[in-house]
Amino acid sequence: MTREVEPLATILRAASFAARVHATHRRKGAAAEPYVNHVLEVAAILAAAGAPPAAIIAGLLHDTVEDSDADPVPTTLGMLEAAFGPEVAAIVAEVSDDKSLPKEVRKGLQIRHAAHASDAAKQVKLADKIANLRTMQSSPPTGWDHGRRLEYVGWAGRVAAGAKGVNPALDALSDETYRHAVARLAEEA
Image 1: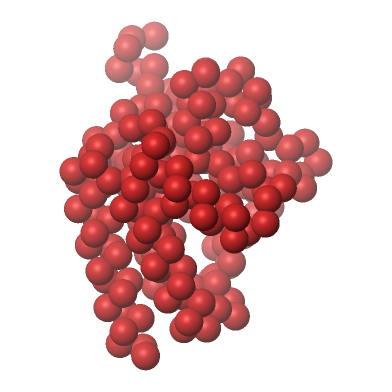
Image 2: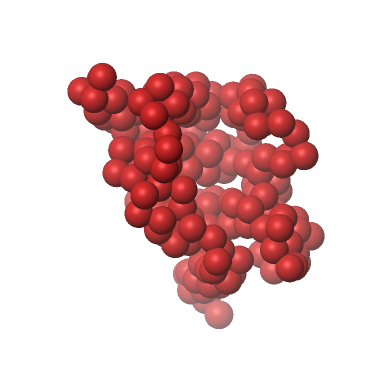
């Protein structure tokens, strides 16, 4: 296998892996999209911004560990390491929440840890927040009122602020997406 084909093949294996893990998962929005659409969007954002292959692969896999805890066979970091290598597993570990902690604690940790993450993890975190802010505008979670959406956008902006400084294209897209989300919420107020 040539060096150019190898990352592409691994990216496609990761997409297939993520599709299997998220096969029964749906987004929280009114559209109830298949969850795999989210990880594909994160990977597409990373690829368009010129992120390294390991970050793109981790983008596809970033929710597999924390979102499969109730599945018959939960995905583990060890499984990801065996399938995609230690670098990808380490990136996924950096961007995964510890679901044993209360939600508010997890949210605070994301803000605090963003600035100290590896460059690849910062890019995945930023792409994830960009995708989530887009979804917050197009199909917000069912039952979320204006205040809760505003709170989420503010929190996502604080996480993103700590993840910036690695990839200028992602930084610019994050700023643009955040401004658009805030403007949209202001129009609704």
